[in-house]
Image 1 (cartoon, rainbow, N blue to C red):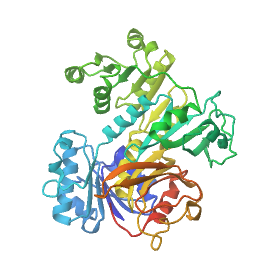
Image 2: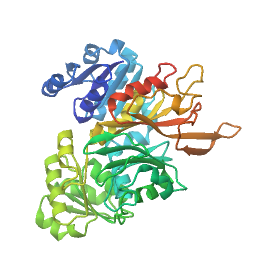
Image 3: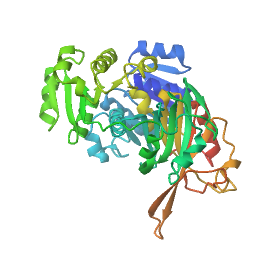
Length: 467
């Protein structure tokens, strides 16, 4: 595909990196030649320096014959104008815009073809907020992902010495949980993937990804590690978009304190939050953390715009007694360096939100894409289309599907419909070798290496089309 990406920030760079590896023709547009130059050095992409909302710049970027525009600059206005121009002047087929303001969500009619002509909108800040909320709900998890509208969950946990299944082969799982269907989708040991088989023994420290119906996921997690007590006291460092959204969404059921250094921003937070306590101060101030009871805090979340401050404050909070710490970190190299040390969970906003965007870019009916292990692996939710005559998947048992090595089908969600065609029940199937895939099944595929994604998508294709 010929794809134009507007914005060479964290999100734009991550999108370019993901899509260029899949043999797409990428043009990246930004007003900073410095950013573009740095990306040109490591990616095979074309770049144009200029304002993405300019017709001249869009024409120079190849809008006349492009297939897809992804507008992810820091400015909502630039992204919206670019989509409108791409539709009106170039009739560019598919247009995606990053929108940080919640105002547009309240007025979806502004995004239709008669107005800003946005086919899909994404808000990375909201995606990250929802992601953190799921981690709060599952304190033991390293990663929590949902598929099929929340019916199926994929949880990543670190196996704990003393867990019932730790030290035993995976085939023992069916004796531990006789009434629960579960699939161990992948195991990472010392950073390297291990394809799970019945005789594979889980060792302490293994990173284990479990796939099961959401209603059973807590039972599965208890097999791998002790249950943590619920998160009650939460301290948030940074009252920016993500910090504010998170505080607003959890303040009813948690004791929330939010630290913000900027006076004006702190006053705004105080006026818009009902139950959270807003404190003006520096999150790296040891005395402030001690005064505010960091040693009694269940979760310290560092969400400022400065990743060095996030690393420092989360590390300090952990040393001073915070039960669990989470830090927002943009650079992938930093994420790999600090996670599992003084910081329990490091989140890259770009990698966390990339799946929402990629789901609209993939060929075929890919309805969800989640990056795992900070982008090294991916899990996809794909709708199976066609029949046994024109599909390599539909009408075939799993043992006859030519999945590439390193890819596995972890679950199938099958809709039961009434006479009017409405879904009345969603069945979660943890498949076996003889399970036959039917048309319209939602198939969840786990790829231990992101390089396998293109082969998996091609396997499910009946024809080429956009969502």
